[in-house]
Image (cartoon, rainbow, N blue to C red):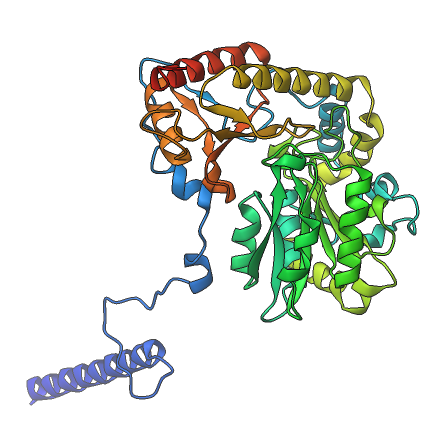
Length: 455
């Protein structure tokens, strides 16, 4: 009788455990069950799908250069005239004052916390003072928006102007990131031409036929990547007069501000007081610190046109997503701007080195069969080389083929013009020292002379 009671108790305990397990399994199943009624979850499969916008990103430079990566001549050291990083060679470095300012900001113990989304007040005040333009209302700290490098500044500006169905006018040749960002933000790209016979000036007369009621902005890059153009005040006045007539706000990519040789740099906002302008800049180029990732936007409004459309508010919301660059670098910026103004000894030495390198490239290029200087650079770190038709055997005007074979045979890296919507050209970076450039052009000349036996 006792044994029977024990067996019954065990059966009851087992039944309770089975019911409990079933309830738990039901709860887990209900938690895993998708919201869509009637769908069945299949164990072992994850609900993962790639984001459409992220998957759709394409970078023309990477698409082209990935096809030749790792194919340099193993018997010759690689020399790159392709990378737009001014710090690749030891003669171009941030100034001692810049480094000291960052060290002081890091070691002070006062710059370890979050900053306002728009950027630190002292940092924005210093930028407002340095980048206010004559003929316009002086900038206020509220007109400045900090960003993680110039690339994010450009992205914020394009996003803020990207009304549904909008299109934007971009320069051709032009930096390919402009198109990448427009595609990402759903903005149709329409190109206006830069004319090599006029020093790569904008085709002002051709702007009107590109514009319709959906055109949301005009992007201007000065000094220019990839062309090395520096626009005169007269040309900028004409360009901005056209923008005013067409009702177009301007995004001014001025990351190479202050990097000009004989022709002085003129900011877009200094050439007209009547056009609303979003100017972007950074420490990347003029201050030789691309890895510091410190950029900014200055809002030069006209008749409160940008404010009335809600653009500054949109820029603030975009800043609230990324929360801006690091606190120590923002803290260092006022001292950097104060201690390295245009014309200081360090800045003068940097420009002298870049101009000497540019002159070396121009001299060597003009002596090589099959190559032609499209227009002499006036600033930045770049110029475009045109391939002459029917001179280089097996290449002709195929810029991608030239870049591929030049890398394979001579271990020289250049970017084909197709990266910049300019087939038949290639871009040369002249940030290297003259000594390095002489060796690079020795190899380029040998390469071209092998293919131009009659020259």
